[in-house]
Each structure stands twice: as structure tokens, then as C-alpha cells.
Image (tube, rainbow, N blue to C red; front, side, top):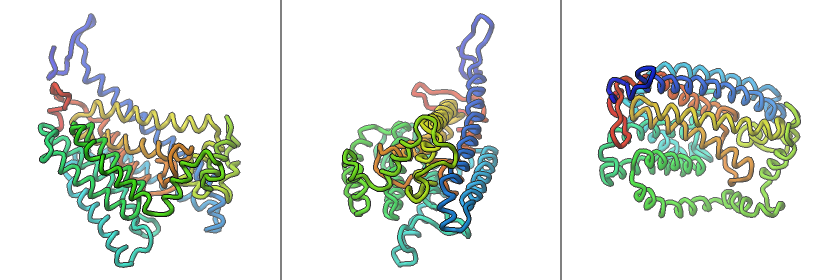
Length: 401
């Protein structure tokens, strides 16, 4: 039984080459992933136009304002997928430290500009002409790239406290704190969750993660109740047994989902999008999907994200090296986690928070960075596991390492 030459065993019909089979499975997963993303983007264009036409008419005197911008974002997103599917993912391993520290610099700069009064309100965006660039999206992916590099480089001593866990935790807390003080508590919480999941999957001792979480969770809870609007959201959520105590957005969202029934009211027939449900084309876009396409349409979107998750796991499992594996896991977990949170909020399973539905919600920065992530996943799926070996603990060696 040989591993180095790619033959794991023999059958009645001759040698069985598992690396070739895994490459084919990974390649199919990459192609299916692209199809899923195209479908989600098409759904996004239709639903954003349907839900945003009235708001665009009142705000911009043009009912197609959101439509054409979303079309442009989708086209740019598909272009981003194609470009980054052709760029060797190992480029991000070489640039990971620079990208992460540059993102930390940008986050700190935004807080400084807010401190001196240049930025009023939330310090989240850098204006770039007609669009705004949300730095936290950049920081999120930069963190994934550098964590993937560190988890791979430190795999021989990943369970060490001082040389492994503390450096990883310091970088994670720096990014999370800067995002939280923007303020952007929901994104900070999700970035922290992604970081802890990657460390756990990378082999960091579970007791280290739990000991860290013990003081962090109460601290996060105190931070969450530091602002009246967050307190109101939490009170609304925990008093959901009393319909009168529900927030306006939650009430309208539940009405919209109920209106849809099994088959929905039809495209463009939503009742909640007009005047009743704020941000129906962004944070609550899933409500419009449920209202216009019904329970079947809502489940279809959930199935697409579930299929995205499975494809991402297949690509990660058969990745040619450790860095590719952790990058694939990080990107897959990020996109699916955001989808899960958005759908849970729209269904009143979680408290209201501003998390977009990937590839569907209106917006450019998140869509482009998620498209970048998908391009990298497809690039990884195209790489053969040439000469790749597994050590007894399952860590990849050889190949791209």
C-alpha cells in the first residue's frame, strides 16, 4: 500500500488512484460552487429590485437606482470570481502579514478620524468616489489568510501556549476590538467567532479557547448593553412572547414571512417592502424572498447555502496543502455563517443586527470580497494533490508546503 505514488490499494480491476478521484470530486465541487454563486447573485438582482424600487423612487426619484447598481455589483463580482480563480492562492500566503497589518492600520485610522471629529457616527467606511469601502470586510479576509498561514507554519507546536496561542489571540483581539469600537458589534462578534473556529480546527487546545471565552463573553455582554439601541434590540428579542414588545422591524418581518405562505405572493407583490419594512433590500432581504416566493422559495435559498457549505468542505478536505485547507475552511465558514445569521435575524431566531445576506443583499463591498473568496476556493479546487502526503495526525505535508 503506497501513498507517495498515489496508489492506496488494488481491486479486482487493478490499481485504485484515490488522488485522481479526490481531484475530480474537488473540481466538480468548484464548478458547482460557481453555479450556486451565480444563482444567488441572480436572486439578489431580482429581489433587490423588487424590494428597493419604492425606496429608490422616494429617495433618488429613480425606481431602478438599486437595480442597476446591483447588476453592476453582480457583474463585477463574477469578474472578481474569474480573476481570482486564475491567481495562485499561495500569493495570499506570501502577502498575508502585510494584508492583515494594513487592515489593522485602516481600522485604527478610521477610529482616529472619528476621535478628532472628521468622521461623524460609525467609523466603518472609506469613501471611494461613488461607492464606500467597508474596511471590516477587508480585515475579515486578511485575518483568514494570515491565520491560515500561522496555523500551517505552527502546526508542529500548535498546542503551545506562548509560541502559538498567544500570538494568534493577540492578532484576533486587535482586529475585533478595532471593529467593535467603530462601533460594529455584530461584525466584531462574527469575526471573533470565525477566528476561534479556525484556531479550534487548527489544533489549538480547547481548554485555552474556553479559558479565554470565560472573561470575554461577559465583557462582550457589557459592551452590548452599553448603547441604548442595542439594549432595546435585546429587550425586544427576549420579550418576543408579547407581540406588543417586539420591535417595529421584527413585527413587519414576521408579517412578511407569514404573508408568503407556501408559494408566495409573486415577484414584485410584496406588501411589506413599501413603507413598512426598512432596509428590505439589505438586512431584511430574506423576508422579501419569503413573502414573494413563499416557504418553498425561502427553503430553496437555504438549500443553496447548504450546498455552498458542502462544496466548500469538499474543497477544504481535498486541499493540496495546509494553508489552502484553512483558507477554504475560513472562507466557507464566513460566508455560510453570515447567511445563517441573516436568515435567523429575519426569522426572529436571533436579535436584530445588521448582517447582509451574502450575494443577495444590496451592497458592493461585501459582495466583492465574498466573490474574491469564492474565486480562491475555485482556484484551490483546480489544484492537484501532487505528491501530497498525510501525517498520522491528519496534517498535510508535501505538495504546496
